[in-house]
Amino acid sequence: MELINGKQLAIDIQEEMRVEVEQWSKNGHRPPHLVAILVGDDPASASYIRNKMRSCERTGLQSTLIKENSNITEEALLKIIQQLNEDETVDGFIVQLPLPKHISEKKVTLAIHPNKDVDGFHPTNFGLMAQGMPQYIPATPLGMVTMLERYGIETSGKHCVVLGRSNIVGTPMSILMSRKAKIGNCTVTLTHSRTQNIKEEVLRADIIVAAIGMPNFITADMVKEGAVVLDVGINSIEDSSKKRGYRLVGDVDFDAVAPKCSFITPVPGGVGPMTVTALIMNTLKSYKTYYLKV
Image (cartoon, rainbow, N blue to C red; front, side):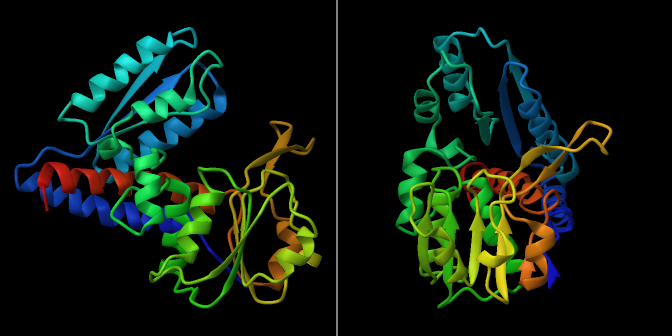
């Protein structure tokens, strides 16, 4: 069993990007610029944003945080988005989800210009991805594809089972793994909460992508010997032995499943850090495409 160390891989890739950004600066170019919009005081969202901002700093990007109160109107938020769409010094921006209930996430997603949609959520980018055309791939799937490539994991001809059908992770990952590409060419089964005999489906998998949002859902008796497991889940469970009273676990029962795997990601320290890194990768792609025009 080999652990896929997403934390270290993220550091390595960010260093590679830092060297690239430094060279652009030496050539007289402004640094790439990522803006994040945070609405409200959700602790998890604030933590995610801090991680993204720190990663930008390490990579040499300019990062800007726009923080708004949870009572901001939908109209006011859409106006901010339009201003960022028109700002030529901004290469990409994200609106941290979830948003307050009075704001339509659909309207917000559609308002972001596809060229600056470095989260990869806009339907235009999703459609381009589905057709294998240049686009921004959603950050978590891009992070996982990058992990598979960097670790030299063969995917062609393999059977990949994805658990979870969200538009952010499960559905795009199922598309990417089926595409005709270096990381792809899989036969893909997309499972979800309504799938019958889900254990039997997962047992067939050479590659498992667990993004169903249920702690320790994948158990050892669901995984065949030698499988590759990518665990997207981040779930808090009570643990009185911890100072904070809880600990983070994935959608996979790691201790029981890991011995059966050829490769597996831990939680934390697996897919999460690569999600942040993929966001920066998309920002650099925008910078090079629309600012440097290379």
